[in-house]
Length: 80
Image (cartoon, rainbow, N blue to C red; front, side, top):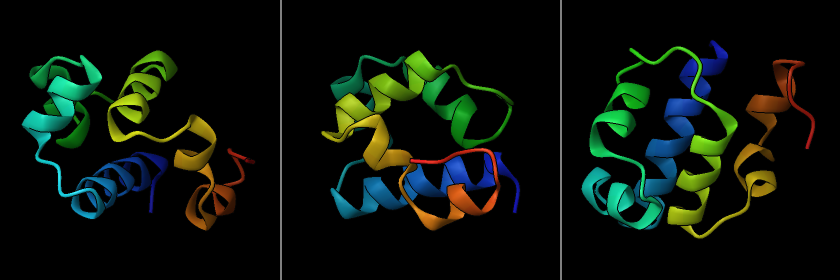
C-alpha cells in the first residue's frame, strides 16, 4: 500500500469514526471541498503538511495522532 493510499484510508477512517462527512470536514478544517476531494480521489499526489494540519484541526486531532499508526511507521517514511 502506498503512502498516498494510507493517507486517504486514514482520512476516511477518521471521518467514519467521528461521523463526519467530507462536507463537514471541509467546513470544520477550512480546507476547500475541491482540495479535500482531490486528496481523497488521489489526484493531488502530495498534499502539503499545512493542509494535512488543517484537516487534523477539523477532525480535532493533532498531526502526531494522525500519523501515529503502524501503517505510516511501516513505510519507513514517518516516525511518530
